[in-house]
Image (cartoon, rainbow, N blue to C red; front, side, top):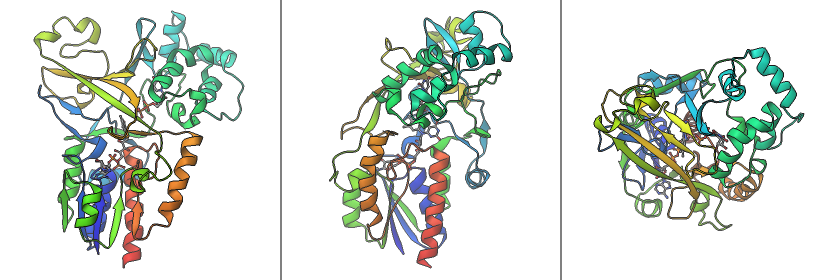
Length: 381
Ligand code: FAD
Ligand code: UDP
């Protein structure tokens, strides 16, 4: 079979890898000038390895997905730790016992924090939205401090208008575990995501990658028996039911040389860095960006310079990248109309974050691409 794959992110590359190794011939196209989609990383002018489209922290609970990806990369284990900056100071985040001590201004025990939570959390047995999910765990003071403003900036929606899973994915702990994530495996690919996906591509026989090529052009010019589509589902159908809602981002990069970092240790805590953690969140409405990422903290790159990236959320227009599908009931209902069309589309498979309109992580889209391609291999045989 000749398969045309639209998109060279995790979904497209993994699907092509499986299909080509089962004897099918694959052409992958991507309209961007590089592979790896939003997970793309590269060295900037200052020589710093950066995540071009926002920080990508690989994590998974799936041994199967880890085993698959580990054939193509070694890993650099990282305990992803971040801070939140509000009310003029850096706070340990996600909320844990250290955060509570900053809140009350004195040392405390897990018991003290549990007592505070029992007295402050709202009694909401089945939280129906992102506001309720946080209020039901920590009460209004911590919710307002860390979640309400950040979420409003990020999504331009109130947390009560977003699925519980949005804020619910942030852990809340009463011990001193201050890691941002909870998955059992947390690490970065040793040589980056771009190299990881290049390695998967190199192990894909009869597969060609064409960059700077749009779907419409490829569809007309590349003969194919089956299409694997990983772009935005509403775009595929010409936005016939109107555009789906997305949030976009603007990234502002700033690099600092060794000389420019002199004296900055008073804030960053160590030489060669600009801020005290790989990510600092800014939940306050006074700051237009949501977070500043200094990925060198996580990559462990040995280099004097550093680069920080400020993230400004923005409305999506058709000239921007649709970074985030919106996890909310109205958006899901709008998506369902497109999903119904997709179900009737012959010889076409829709996978990935944009084609299924889900707020998925890299491990989840990898799992989806593996499952979908195995199904296709069975159908084609
Ligand atoms: P994408 O990476 O979006 O790839 C789709 C590709 O298709 C793109 O390269 C695009 O150019 C191409 N394409 C689309 N339409 C067309 C067309 N018409 N013609 C040609 N090409 C087309 N995940 C994590 O696991 N951990 C994280 O910490 C994390 N952080 C994130 C931070 C940000 C800011 C964002 C936006 C996402 C983050 N993610 C994270 C999610 C992660 O990016 C996705 O799970 C993953 O990249 C999805 O892969 P994909 O192949 O489905 O889609
Ligand atoms: N969030 C928040 N305050 C924070 C961090 C996160 O309110 O300091 C909320 C916000 O709605 C965000 C969601 O939790 O969109 C998920 O956060 P995460 O850091 O996982 O977002 P992503 O990396 O996917 O942008």
